[in-house]
Length: 331
Image 1 (tube, one colour):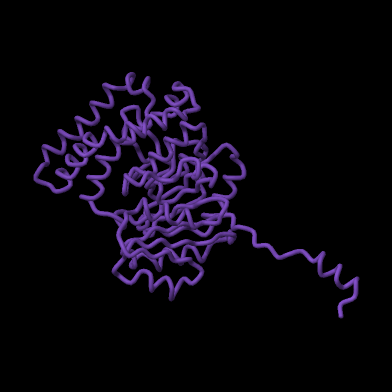
Image 2: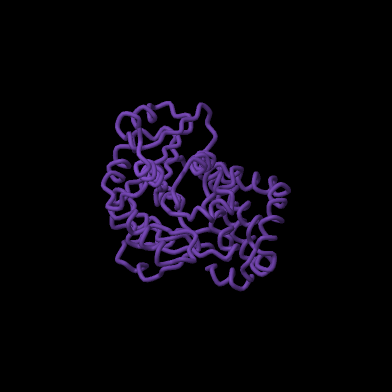
């Protein structure tokens, strides 16, 4: 028999609750087994430990899932029996995530020990930033930049800031960029859900530029975390023909969805000139598979415009920034 005092103590005892992690680290994977030891070595070395790992496998055939289950038991594995593409894998992982902030991390990267800690510091010091871009360096040349935050040109061509330059800290005092590279960046869950994640029609490549553009239109900033370093194996998650096709197509779609009408008109000569230059260069090298893939991508981009313009109507109706403010973010 329990006395009254014991009953009150039992009733008043607080229930145990499990707080969501600060970060959910999302790792999309397709036949990336050779990269996983380096990736998880980096994750296991993190100084900031309040995070979960979600490994979204896109029907790999190289034993990736088994390796993670055997060697990285802290990761939650989301296997797929059909190949749905990089973008769909990330979106699937995001739907399963419990963290307050989503961290996108390519399978062909190795984060430095302070990576998550520096992302967290930047998030806390930049409350208006919906995205935080990490600094990506080359895996084999760790003092050479792959991107110090992504930029968007007035000609409609996205650019990796500082690409191929030796990292001497030349970008470390600039704390705002246009967008983050999807290979290593953090996104506030609130923003991710407002944007409904990546556009799955993109399949792969430039989906991060599209997300960053849509975030800017909503009035969110992208902050740069220079000390959040990640080492990237170039070409580890895609091929030249794949990237040429999807970059060609998705660049056109990104512009069609996101560039405000006044800026499309103002910068039309630069935009048209950039696309024609890409096409002419590809035609001069048309014997190469990548060049032909780029032309096919541009054609696919133009053919898909009727469907993309329907999305444009929704994106532009939600715009919160004045066109002049958007133009200020372009280079």
